Amino acid sequence: MASIQDWWLERLIETPRPLQEKLTLFWHGHFASAYRPIEDSYHMYLQNQFLRRNAVGNFKDDLVHGIIRDPAMIKYLNNNQNNRNSPNENLSRELMELFTLGEGRGYDEEDIKEGARTLTGYSFRDDGFQFNQRNHDDSRKTIFGRTGTWDGHDFVELIFTRPAAATFVCEKLYRYFVNDAPGGFTKSQAAVIRKMAATLKRSDWELKPVLRQLFLSEHFYDEENIGACIKSPAQLIVQCIRSIQTPTRSLRKLNEACGIMGQSLFNPPSVKGWEGGRKWINTSTLFVRQNVAIYLLTGRDENAKPWDAGQSDFTVEHLVEHLQGISGRDTVRDGVTYLLRFAHSTPPDEDRIRQWTTYVNERGGRLDNATIMNLLALITAAPEYQLC
Image (cartoon, rainbow, N blue to C red):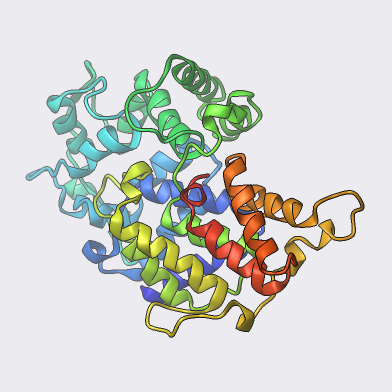
């Protein structure tokens, strides 16, 4: 499992399709399952490939219909123990509560019980889905007031007749990509989510039109939504490597740090996934967040001797070399401003520009490798670096 964690982190870092990987991480937290209860690393790998393959596919036909046939999810929610004589409600409950409709939105306990009966016999054998007809309850069931000899496929189709099916997932996509502030949505945010939900239904549950609409909207670039999300531990690590082009260092150490910061890949804390947002930040995780950036910049881990930027094993002068030799400009101030714009998602604060320009000038006024490295250490330790 550790090897698969390292494989995925390396893929996140090196992928030429970062949106696909970021969505795979989103779906991993949405359709959350963890390797310890499953006890089969290959099934976790297969689920990860399934989520990646359908990351921008059809929410209903690809992802939801697929997840109820996924061996890892079936084992995680004990649906392999769900049979006509002893229905298990886990998958039915989470399918509505966490995967499609949201808690308490348009269903009741009877719908959960009846839904569990539709999923009897849904199991797996070896590495694939298996429908066990002998364990399936093929009698009549009543769900959302409609009666029939429903099976799991019918159950999903019934769920997507409910109004909340489009809204719930759009709310989660909005918090993931736009603004993860706690509490309810503002009027403008709610209006954007309603438009996303309408597009999702109109496009017959295809995700691409919804994402395209969101990313091309003016709202996506509103000032209130710039730097309005806190980077997850995985994003913090991957973005630092990809943007500053640091060495990857040790994938194992990075994955261990990711776990300490609260996001162990393939091991979310519960079926609810990671809460995200402000839950990522506390006095312990913030310390590790700063240390992991220093580790990527310098190779120094928490047990090493104090580092000397002049002895760094890679150079960062290329980040500002395009600013050199421009007549009539303050190269130091321009360099500091560029690094802040480059690394922070929010507009740079004038006091920070002034403070760090003074720091460079006191070191001789040269943006050499050691000075830039020190600046990046300060920049990645700033609160603004935690935002995206």
